Length: 402
Image 1: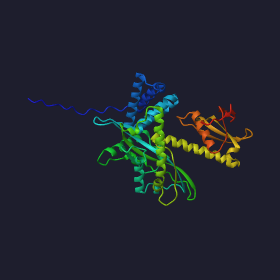
Image 2: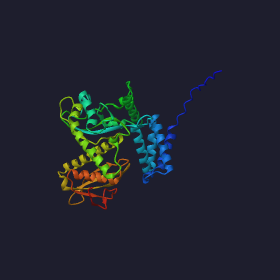
Image 3: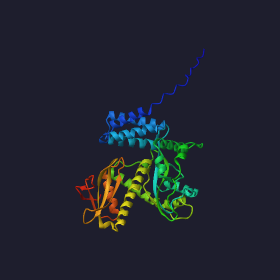
Image 4: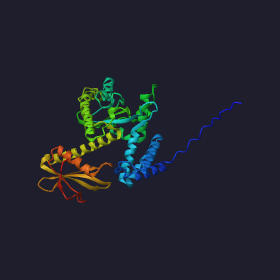
């Protein structure tokens, strides 16, 4: 008699772990890995911790557990700065990049990238003029490969929208991961696929605050996705330092050339009424890195604008005053201060504070601000170890440019 194969019924879905349990696990592994940067090769125990950390992050991303990720990041920030940097780097990497392994062919990787843009217009950008020229958009999309920003063997999807910073900041880790997955499906499936997460990301710009005759400078982002084969030599960074430097220099030169080519295309994509548009480009980067760079640049421009306002109020030229840079304490922790003072004494004519980013070191922040102040013509630059509660600088020394 022929035996009948028994097919078991469907297994009950396992109960989802609570957010706090997932957060506890993420914090524990991040604390275990806080000193991982000192190893050229991780010991077996830390390799296991790293594997478990990544597995838990992927679980959170797949199950849309944004709260668990946010809670873990906040707790590691409170407990240990190095653990926070480890966890944040892993979450950012895994949310914006997905690796697909294939048995019959090379593995593939897809990531989300941004190109931040500082857009100068008269009257400000208008949301109803955003990316209305389909031919210009198609040429802009194709230019990423024609201009050598991405490999000609890759596939590139560009979203037909100039993202406002508010929209970019509203994209959480889980939504970004879902957007990357949607882009992959759009590139690899023959049938049309839904892209709900990408559609939700275009929430719309806030109302413009510019009058028709105002000179406006606004931050916008191009957002796209690149699908590449892991054996594509275009993306392989040479192992030797000198060769790697040449690789990145060539890439930077291609970006500079591309930005000139993209300028007229972006004008057609951003305005439809014939107004002139000037675009200052920041370097193409992965989603989180590009966002962080743009926010830091925007904050630096704010500080420089406030310094210039102080100079204007006192009728002073940049080279007629001195600036003292250093940390001071604020209600929510250390901030970086620039004290603008009379050149022939210590009388302060203005002070501007700049909050530090969570992954930013005070040393790097001082160097960035010093270089920026030198860039607007300030020549008498000094660094202090600390401003006290009365605003007095201690241990002042001349600033040494990088």
